[in-house]
Length: 395
Image (cartoon, rainbow, N blue to C red; front, side, top):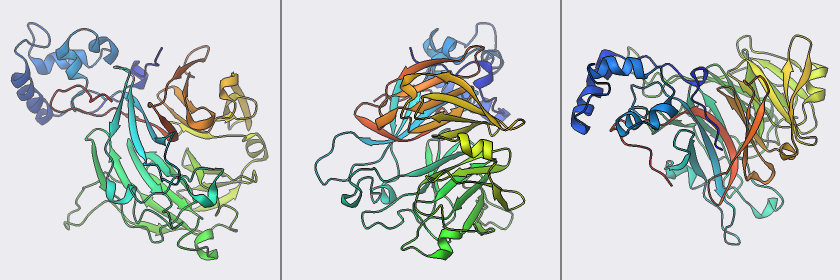
């Protein structure tokens, strides 16, 4: 049974304006004659329907089903994957695919990415037969941001971030990197996006110790001078060494800090506000034994990929606390957390485990990955809107 993300605590209560209501009423007039609720104007009826779980509205009638995908309805959370085909021709570089799982309709849909840059990303290379090359991405302010990848010539693939806004179903570009890089540490806490260490066109000590920060703002904003207000990358305090330069590291953002652990089990913490670095607490780094993610920038969850145990970090007593143990968690590769759910990609990138950590007794369910795809990245973001009152396009 597919998991549901539409309980009240999982719904983002988006602010609706008079303009939005007017636009919605006009669309309703074009698409159906019956009111949403008999005896009430549609804009009043929607205020009532906004309080009902989307799964309930979806199952009642077509008008309500269309309503939950409009820009004026509070968006529920969906699951997004970056993946590539499990079977490709020998020597052929697979194509990156972005997909979204709608937990209300229980369907996967494919999102068309901007091809000029993504077609150059190399996911498999003859020099790395035993591994897939990483595509580094983060979630920030309800957007998916692609930050780093590798070309077939083993060069940085992205000159600037690529941003996908699920509510508008649009792609845009972030500010150019001062130094495009690959195999770096990348993460976000609140609206601060950070890339650290890594390799540029070739290895240098300068890049391997460098840290750049970008304060994310919604794309296409214009400041008073008519300039793009999407920000710039700023140089921050450098790392003390280059130990994080040859891995694609997820920097987990929590309470204004970024937590990073490399393959050698060396951990550091970066304060995005004070621009300070320090060593990770022994209890934290010692128990960090697999992929980790933060829930709403407040609690860090981690899967012990050897023992198959989901844990959360108690920062008061500085220990990892067991949440759930299951053999299916062994070999976990990727993780995302949001809306009371922790989602984990199984070993081999096939199959997603969904753990309800908000329940009194956490429970686990299994979700199939997009057909024929191996997952490289996982995110929990708002569902996509369909302003024309159309249900999502299904694969």
